[in-house]
Figure 1 (cartoon, rainbow, N blue to C red):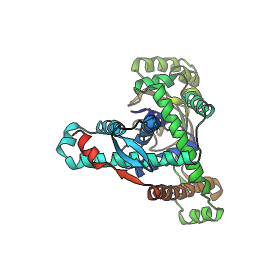
Figure 2: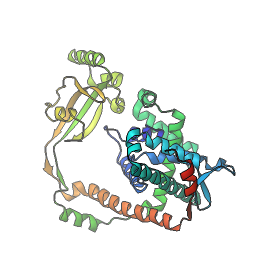
Figure 3: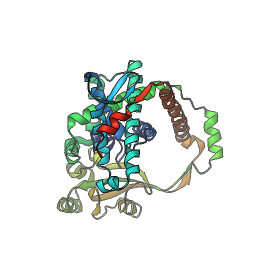
Figure 4: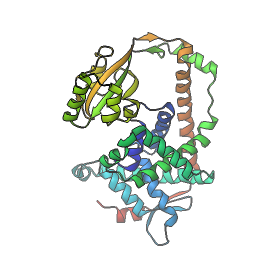
Length: 348
């Protein structure tokens, strides 16, 4: 996982995240789909590579020119190496068509990213050190002391992750200025949506839950024994849990069915109120769960789900506006691909 991937891992893990963070995640993923990349985080990694463009000197081979700015062969090769790592060597060797499509996608992605950065520069947008440090503190606060351990486990250098986050924040500013600022949703539109989509405000059963997750079984057993002796769940979560919600005493917030991975989901929706589960193993580690509230399924009024409807309509309009915005950038751009350089230098 690259540094940018780590950024999203921090923002949108299976634990609670804020609505604003998830909206921005969706926008960034949408850009990634427009770039036709397989991983929604690859765009940010490429932005880090593109940021070196100011240091380029004449004479170095380039694979494309976008509005007079070059994309250099070394940038293309770096991205190609990252993306080929997602496929088996045999698969790429046996399917030349797949390899060629991959190479075309990567070049198109680099070109589009160059356009995006040029637009941000045209608007005079930047991310100050104060803004960056504030966001860094916010993210590190969500993970507490486990933050740097998580970076190490994902084999990500802090400096690389920090630079990727700065690029992500620049893109947030660009989307806010060029796309989201012009989007409006009226009350009439929200009421019409409520009438036309009666199932939207039907809520499934939800539970409020907390968890303690440990990396090994021995530690989970120690926690379990201490809980049986009457120690406080939240205190033990803060002391032992490696999940980002540990700083909140393990509180995961309200959870709907099929949100958590199995077997956690099944455990949560069969666990009695205020009871603590036995140790549950998942891909994330060893979990001990506790349900603190149970909310049965029901149909909500318009007033209760009004904000959710507004958010859905806004997201739909933002996606349409985003697609139009990106297409406009592409239509205005003057692009020249150096096909001969690609053919001569792309490794088989």
